[in-house]
Length: 180
Image 1: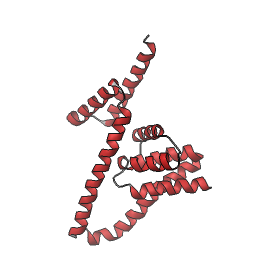
Image 2 (image 1 turned 60 degrees about the vertical axis):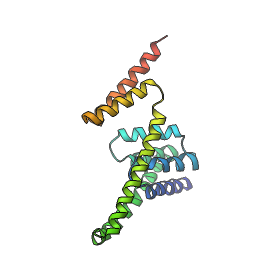
Image 3 (image 1 turned 30 degrees about the horizontal axis):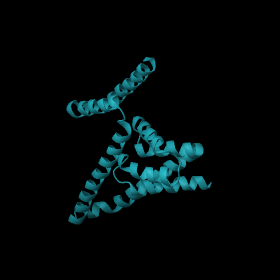
Image 4 (image 1 turned 90 degrees about the vertical axis):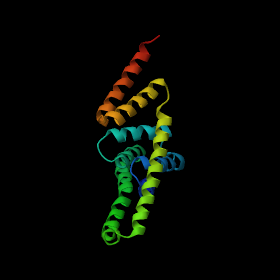
């Protein structure tokens, strides 16, 4: 029972202190799950994070579910998921009840502008860490560059990009095994 409480509390903290969605949660997730509780390694986190991006749903919820299930089975997955969504639910209820009355205030608009910039910085930090962990050889650097180009220049669907990158990875691995 104590592990379930720890899961809930850790993911509640992640949920309440992470503004900006899945990418922005990566530093907090690493601190809580890897450094504080040692429930996973940084490589595990990256794997879960990648899988969470590829599966339908919210990245934070998917990641919490994967980690919770790894730590304490199905109950752990449920508890970690509840932990990460509870703060959002409570905050949204609170904000919805007051925002309409205060959204026109200049100070509120400035606060949202400041939050937006901070979230951008956190997302850039997470992207940089993902690149550093993922672009480990010439092939992955080429796939990264090609993905960036087709996304930015042509607006190719992320689904197609993930499928293509997966196929390239599989073919490269097969080619590497068959080479002397």
